[in-house]
Image (tube, rainbow, N blue to C red; front, side, top):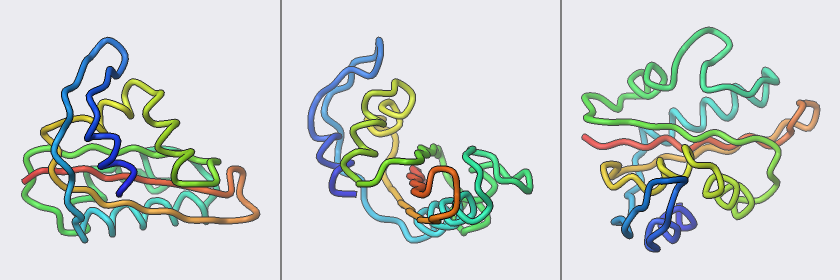
Amino acid sequence: MDLTNAARAVPRSCGATSYAAAAPLTWNAPLAQAAQGHATDMATQNYFSHTSKDGRTFSQRITTAGYTPYRTIGENIAAGQTTPQAVVDGWLKSEGHCRNIMNPAFKELGVGYAYAGTSTYKHYWVQDFGAR
């Protein structure tokens, strides 16, 4: 979370979109529950997708975790990076992921990480963003 807020504190361009510095995000337990659940699910079931193997979308997972009602939500996922810094650096180089990080409409964040040594990518990372 600290790395994400540090990134938001600096104006940057995400592809063709320029962003001013954004306010820091606050921790949210239901978003963290949704993010951790999805990271664990991807690691243990050996897949990498915003859609769970059972067909659930990130919005369904976030709602099920209790983050409702909401005005807006978003999700970043990553796999294979071994450190939080590498994950955030990678997201900032990806236009869509960077836009989620810098989006001033997002006010809250939950993060998840899971490791499964026998899975394809071993390390799985999730950020779930929201605003109510």
